[in-house]
Amino acid sequence: MATELNFLISSLKGYLVELRETGVDGLPYGYGVERVAPPPVVAEELPRLETNDISGSATGSETVAQIRLELGGCQRCQLGGTRTNLVFGAGNEKSEIVFVGEAPGRDEDLKGEPFVGEAGQLLTKIIQAMGLAREDVYICNVLKCRPPNNRNPQPEEIEACQPILLRQLQAISPKIIIALGTFAAQTLLRTRAPISQLRGRIHDYHGIPLMPTFHPAFLLRNPGKKREVWEDMKQVLKLLGREPAGS
Ligand code: URA
Image (cartoon, rainbow, N blue to C red):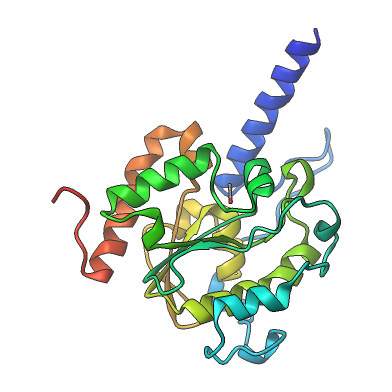
């Protein structure tokens, strides 16, 4: 009975994550009570983060190591009290490509490294298919600490972490950012538009081109969507003047 219940709960959780990944961010609250998601807003209608919105220096002259040092044992939000390790980011700090995911999961929290679980293994394969190695790119997340039980990030956690990410991205100054999944794409582009509408074309993040695409965890549940991610990665490679592996 307990096993069946666990199976049911985990299936339901997977289904809800999938809905969120395709842009559904609200469900009706009981019978006869209509609770609709706020209308989608296009990125251009939302206020942009100006450089002076962020804490600390954001001149582009600071290094990733300096930002990490300043972050220390961050307690800017409640996740500082529940994480095992802060997951700042990993890879080549001079890379032309930065992948940005949502937040560390259990494996990442334990290791202190982004994308080391099952979704991370798929991300590694995507990077390799692009003719690159993990060490060639930089990988990080919108949130640097794991939300307990992988719950949705809270607005105050996003607000506390966003300035750090912006500084990190300005320090790396890549030629392109790849936003993995709904959460990363919507947060970076300050939009409510679903990932299915955002992906497939290049957007702008503070002057840096940004390609939104499906999250590898979503691809694990929907392998049929890998083709679309590959189309997105081909556009990225074209922008960089690079060829996919084996071509
Ligand atoms: N999913 C993410 O969004 N980030 C990670 O680091 C791992 C899984």
